[in-house]
Amino acid sequence: MHIPDGFIPLWQCVIYYIVVIIVGYFAVKWAKENLDERKIPLLAVLAAGIFAIQAMNIPIPWGTSGHMVGAAIVAILLGSPFAGFLVLAIVLIIQGIAFGDGGLTTLGVNIFNMGIVGGFVGYYGFKGLKPLISKIPAVFVAAFLSLFISAILCVVELYFAGTFPLATGFYFMGLYHFVIGIVGEGLISTIVFIAINKIRPDLISSGAI
Image (cartoon, rainbow, N blue to C red; front, side, top):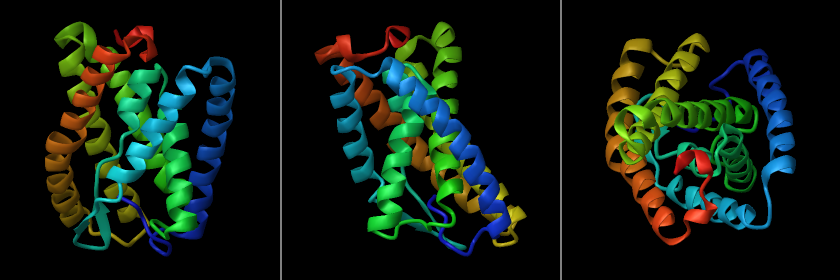
C-alpha cells in the first residue's frame, strides 16, 4: 500500500501533508497526556512488530503493494486512534528515509492512509462493534476494515492523481487486501489482542476490556 514518489502530484501531496501535520499535533498532545512508563514499552514493541510485518510486501499490478498495516490493533490496545497514527507515522518515516519503501513526497499520503484512516477506522470500528458482537470478534472485524478501507481509499487517491485505473485498481487492491485483511490483519490482530489480554491485561486500555 506504500505509494512511491511520482504517483501523486505535488500539490496533492501538500494537502495530505497538511492533514497529517494537523492530526500529528493532536496525537503528540494525546501522547504527552496519556503515555506512561507502562505503555511506552508496549508502543515500542508494537512498532517493531509492525515494521517487521510490513516488510512482507506482495506486489500488486499497476505499481503498488499489498501488506498488513497494524494501526488498528495499536489503537485498540492503547485506547486511541492517535496511538495508531503515531506508531505508523514513525514506522513509515523510517521506511521511507532509511529503506526507500514508499516515497518521501508521498509520505504524507501514506501516513494518511495507514496511520489516520487505519487508526481511526480500527478504533471506532471496534468501539461500535464491541457492544454488538463482543470484543474478540470486534477486534477481528475492525482490523479487517481498517486495512480494506485504507486500500480502497488508496485506489481512489491514485485514480484522482491520474496514475491508477479505477475499476482495475478496485479489483486488484480490493481482492488482495480482502484476503490479506482476513488471513493477516484480522487474524494476527486478534491473536495479539488475546495474548496480551491473557498475559498483561493491565496494559490494555480499559475501553477495550
